[in-house]
Length: 70
Image (cartoon, rainbow, N blue to C red):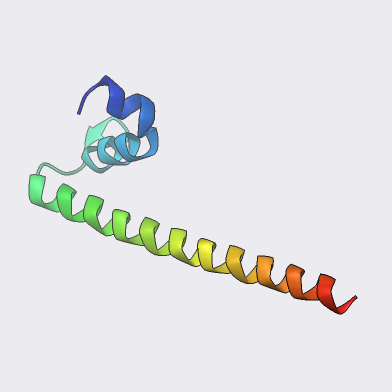
């Protein structure tokens, strides 16, 4: 982790810190557990992004077809 990670990937850096420390106390010391949580979160984020893109495409198609009908 470096300064650029904090600047350009703030949400992910915050999530990593949040996995280690919660409420000022160490929550997790296992590197494997933290990496698993990070990978799981990456998968969830990717799925949500793909669902958003699919919905965006369907909305665009619906608007295009609505204009053609009118």
